[in-house]
Length: 241
Image 1 (cartoon, rainbow, N blue to C red):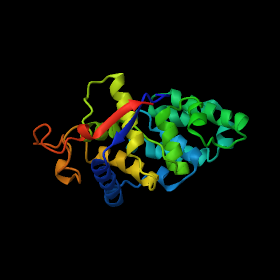
Image 2: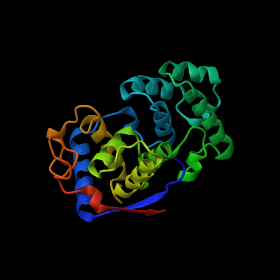
Image 3: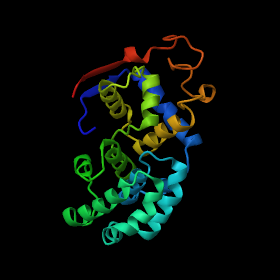
Image 4: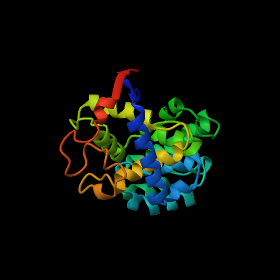
């Protein structure tokens, strides 16, 4: 999604609860992943492209092998495409090798070999959408940018009561929320935390409500009648961006 249709405002109390819960969860239960040990925008972009439609467990060894062979933009841009695809193609979704190779060559020619530092410039790269650009902005540069993958969509949709109707309108609302919930400080920790929160606790099947720090305030908590908790939907307002 290149353009966000809405902006969102969230009432202070549920917003504060949500941010505190996510940050606490990340401090205590956040995953140690190889791409979280760097602030190199190139390495982070590589990880995000590899993670497209692929599990973390499958990506970890491929990411390590890729970065060992192509540690810099220049190394990747100078490689043969077949050499790149030999590493990435076994993951499936075979276009990603072409994306990474083309990105490196574009960065070398159009940006002097330095990764772009704005959301718009990142989104102009092949295969880079708003989520991937936001991930680079927040994880590499510490900039306040929303991220919205499947896990984050589920967490926001449940806590803020966005109907799961599969419409484009829902995606616009979720993107507005993803931008609104990011705090001014601890952007890196928060965005990593909300993804881990969805992957490990607020899961699609068998959500771990008993260990969730938001369970007392979440309208979607297991065993709770609809709207028995403080209704988050009544605390969110959307308007045209």
